[in-house]
Image (tube, rainbow, N blue to C red; front, side):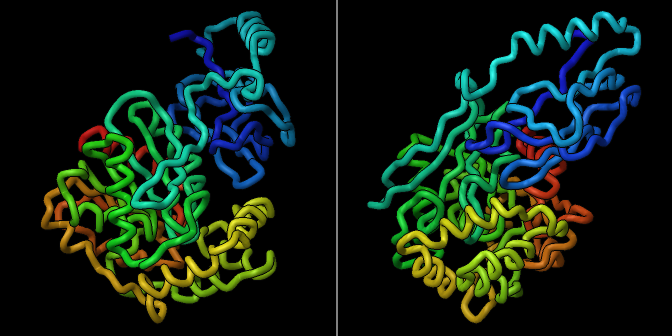
Length: 372
């Protein structure tokens, strides 16, 4: 490895082409280790933190707070203290001279969204990575594959990663009949089949965790492990007002406080995020689909299905991740994790720790998958 290493603008999600430097966490001259926070980045949808991938000393902060930087662009330079200043300057100069923004060089190994037919429905999905065991990401109620913007690229370094839109969500068909858990689980298993995936690690968030567990119970031979994040299916209690609020919200003013319940840090909900969700909710058929799913899975504001105990009997490797400030599904449900599961409750995180504490969740997932 070179003694001089760049810290670049990450790509969080298929549509991200640039990010804005929010605030620097380190100064020039600070020592950093692998995993240390370096700089806060704001995108049009959500904000995140860039970590250092190497240990060393911050020798340059190349851009100022407020600057917009293309994906892959140079943010900072980390190097050994022994490296001369002239070599650092030459590294920055050569990097900038040779850098090609993504929109001019799309050979990044990431495929755009595709569509397959599963059980007579169009299902949208995206892929990352070219090798390794397959990992399939399953979003929660009202979400879509874009919810994995921080997760998929990180896991794709060692795995073939797929993220799909469940029926009624994102770019998939809006017909969800009969809208019950069995049909969603069968869609997930059908998705594996049409993509030629014999066996996969399933990572599910909230309702997606419930669907992943149901799929494992229907056909455990197809599931290598389960990673369940703020998952439904661990108990009956939940915030029914969140579900009703999400289904019923028809304006930015109504929707924003509902989305803020997904995070401990409500400032993460940007205007663009609210607008994107509102645009989805106004598509033909979405309102009826969400209402049917809510009535089937969360009747009366409670969870119909509790599967964690049954999953424990399968003997699969299971990782359970929760935010201790989850307002949608009680963090106390982590105590109902399947027997033998690894359980991690993240301090200061809400219902979406894979977005709010992405680096921590990615480390948990990578460590779990490496041994699963």
